[in-house]
Length: 443
Image (tube, rainbow, N blue to C red; front, side, top):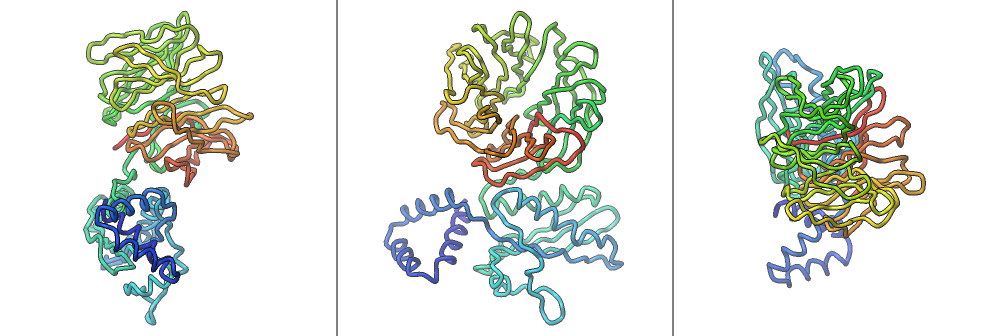
């Protein structure tokens, strides 16, 4: 983490060095004690919104017979896409790269500094049989120091996963935390004309259809361990809650009680599921998978639905219209104490509780749904989307730094991701039909 803060500082210094303010800035830094220096670097790192420019030239093909020439561009494209989606990097246009007299790219850091690069990733690869080996080197252009020098090994047919590993390594070395590039999504798509469950990589690639019910499958939710998915389906004519094993592909029925199901949510320990069952009225129940018991946890008048567990599993946030309109509430499971969290908007729904203890939800206002986040006590409300169609179904990344959501801003509903502050909103699914109800898990 300290490295990433120092990178942020030296970048700011580089941008300010031609001004008088740089001199004043440096004087203040050297006059302050070391503890104050650390605090300043933390603030700069936390609130800076400027991205790092990273140059990623085509990878060098080391195969003697020059096989797999397409990987020369395909491999760096994956890394560039990862870093671009992270919101912390801007991959530079290759047209800006400076060539030497013989047409090769110069490793001289001064050449890359001249075009505004902060970091340079140079790599070469070889394929033996089905095995792909990539040697990657990341340089800090400003200091000329090599930050990463590693070999990455994998199967050529899953080269994207290998490049995701390189992206994660870059994120860790530069930003100070792991990337999201090896995570998985589950979602509902109407690509076949029916609502079916699909999974994909975090960036929408490697799509795989999970259900083939030719009916209606809804609300897929990954288990915390990433090996199971729950979903609701009318495959047998009535709404039932199903569980599918991601590895074996086996499907079993979890609940077949009469009524309308919706919104299952896993507890962090993977041993409990909160779900809504509508019999006399919609209420929230918790299924204990170990003891195979079902407990009703809400009984207040009105509709209670869409539960999501807190990071410690001791509370749930949920939606209730007990005040006259759908609002977000929180319930402490042990004591049964309930508290209203939202007071703005007259239709709030789909809460999702992050591992960093913030809650995302969608709110209907002025004819549109928008995504908001707030602290778990309802404070520090932030609006993340606006004037971009309807934005719904927010779900946090496993590290709590990103949000995936569905939006119809370009016509049909597709999945988008954004940073936790709402920046860097990017479409990630381009399938036929609509993609909704995303769930995110670490692989």
